[in-house]
Image 1 (cartoon, rainbow, N blue to C red):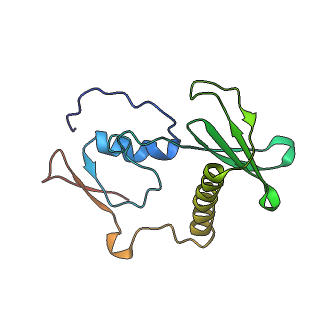
Image 2 (image 1 turned 180 degrees about the vertical axis):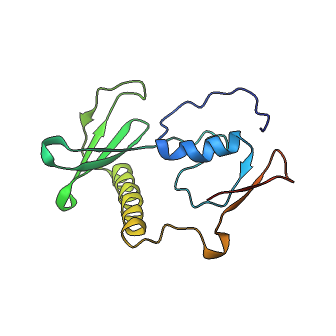
Length: 147
């Protein structure tokens, strides 16, 4: 197991970041195609969280970044919200501006990319990497074979 000093990661953290972070904490170096990031190496960049819900059968998806919530709906609809601070849950509708449109483009890119990868079964390891062999950073001589 790798030695890491206790630390706290503050901010919006989606579950897609858990696996890369836990592997890093365990000292495992890997080449898996994770969409998430190791939270121990992201620095002070603002976090983001991905959301989905089925409110009134609308199947909305969204991205939360700092004080902004971007909601993408069916038929290419977009709704923008802001809150006074990260600690607040009081979101208010917001008019589109350049910053919100950029967040909309980012959210669309993430959701479209993951959909395309999944739908066309392109989210895989390279054939030469199967079965996956993972080296431990804590014990570089140790190899772990994953099914």
